[in-house]
Amino acid sequence: MNMDDVKTGKGAEMKMDCPVCGGKNTATYTTQTHELAYFGEVVESTIQCEKCGFRHNDILATEQKDPAKHSLIISKKNLDSRVVRSQSATVSLPEIGIKVEPGPKSEGYISNVEGVVVRFIEATERALNMFTDETSQTNGKRVLENLHKVLDGELETLLLIEDPFGQSKIMDVRAKTEPLTDEELKNLKTGFTIIDD
Image (tube, rainbow, N blue to C red; front, side, top):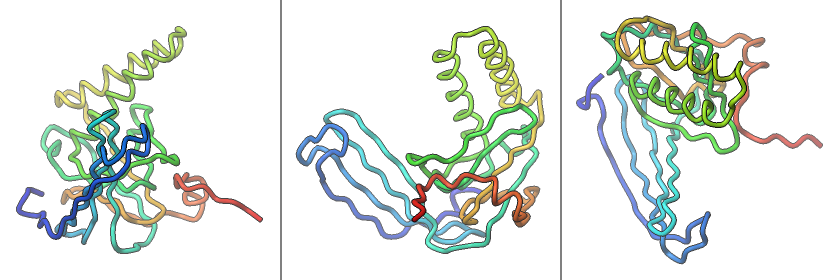
């Protein structure tokens, strides 16, 4: 998929108080609609504060879809394939042993396969700085080495996106899409807080 497959529609911008530092009218809230080929309409929103630097991005699909998992073997040929990850999706490279599950502050994004791998690299580097025990360092360095091999085209690996609300997609002709089983759905986190009575 290239930029010809993305049609940008209506956008809006407004000033607001920063939800982090409380600065009066220091944050800009921007929304933009995009029509993605083979996927549908999404709304991209951004909040950015000029005072404290806070930034929050999100992508919301405007249509509800069936729960689905999307998979693609990452190779040097498809690093530029488009990826839409909703805030409720779990993204993993299971053969490398790394997974990002949604939480209350999860953000959706539009990227490409390379960008997803770079996000994993950045998360692994942060984890290596936080966890200094020998086991964490050994495992983290192994994961980091494999992630760099994927980017360099030296290692092919499976990219898996599991979305209980069906709002994510890997846009590549080699990508597979399958429904999530009831068992898989039961074990997925959604990032939303549920309060039982």
